[in-house]
Length: 147
Length: 365
Image (cartoon, rainbow over all chains, first blue to last red; front, side, top):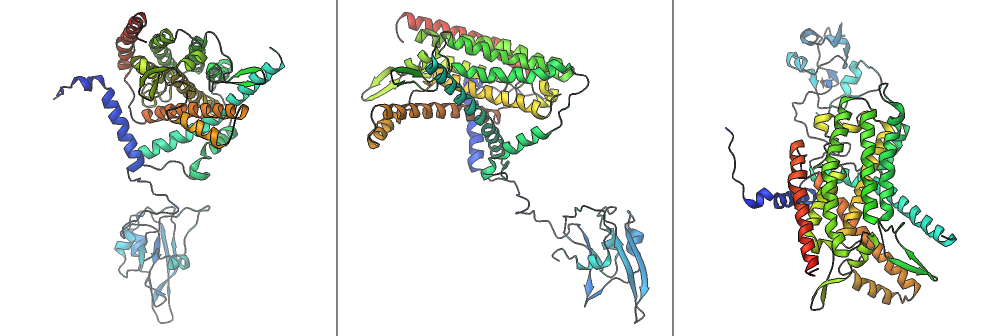
């Protein structure tokens, strides 16, 4: 329902209202807290659940991954490529572990599927490059994103 | 005119053009930073100290842009239009006095490029030429939005120019002169003497209603918010300059800011005493003249400097006011704009003339 508010003579004149409005903007100009985050120097704090660039977790210098192929299976974008191999002590391990970040949709399902807590998503979000790169195992092992 | 006059006019014109050209980038910076701060942002603060060189970078970018014209434009008029709106914006300032006068040798030099005997009429005539640039741009661009923009511009101009002209009649009646030099000089006279405090005869004190109408009309004349209907981003994309890009667009932008400068200068000349010293500056001037042991020519030069500074402060305030209002008020709806122009401002300005006439007849002012 349209309710017509009763306006006084001074409000009908608008002049005083305009001057009030001018002082509201002036108050904002001088005293209001500015919300801009000045990017390279200041950064937004993301939650720990943020899904950024992947990394492979390692214990005692050996990656947790056992090349069980659950993550490439669950991956909807089919961006994970693993080739399995066998170590000296008969343990299965990934010879090749590549992630094509250009295909990745950062859904985080690989992280959920992983039984060994090996593939994780960090909170690194600056991933722009000048060439199309497929990230390899050695690189992914180094990426921890502050975790 | 002999050599001295030519030299003086050339120096004054050069000075004004240089100052006006500097004003544009600074105003663009003020507009962008001011609007940002009012909206709780920071605005451009990376290029140079406080982001002051941002406009310089923008101009460089404009210059390097491709100079293309869309295929459907009327090419000659399309290219002419930015110039037609830019040149009058420069020309208007010629009749505005920016300081009083000084004696150089035995010659009187007035700080006004041309003290025309039609002063204020010249300003109105040239300022309304600027709208031809807008109409030409809208027509030559051969597109719907630009056409609508220029139509709006022309009807807005008709409805506001009228009350603008009529509101100034009051000032002309009280000072019985249309020469801007005279109007500025006569505003130095005393209106009221309250003990040792003398209140000058500034236009706003004797013509408050006229000032208000003139101010509103000046906003409409310069196409600034709340009357920027010809641009109206949310309705007609960008209005009359939709089909322009690169430096041609920048010329329209420059013309807008120059019109703003001229409007501020005219407002302060007509209603705020022009180059008359601000309250308190008179004492400061005599103190400075004594402290520096100046007399004769030096003292005169200092006085002129103070007058220019005073004029600059007034103009600067009004330019800031233009920016301030733009980021405070929303745009008018078109019918509201017409209502305000024809049903409110025109009758009010007529009443203002009538009342001023009575006051002049009975000798109250």
